[in-house]
Image (tube, rainbow, N blue to C red; front, top):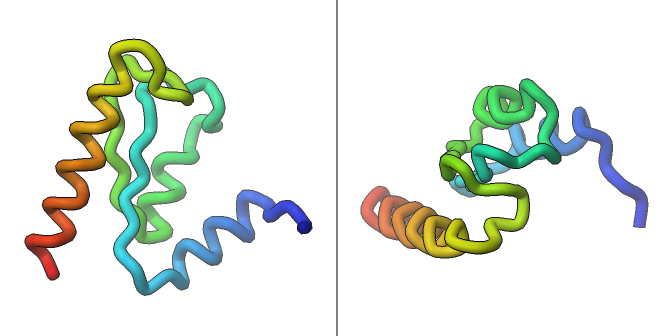
Length: 79
């Protein structure tokens, strides 16, 4: 399966009709500088978990659970 480029990913994201919430760790080193703003411009709602790394390990796993729960509740309220 071919790998999508960042621009292809963002283009597909912009055409998406399904609400998208991207939950990202604030200490994540895997995302380049303007990745978050690029996803927001493409239509995603981005939620950043302060101090969490890419894998949300350690105590951040509970913050991830809270962020996912909050996002799901918010989506249900809007529908």
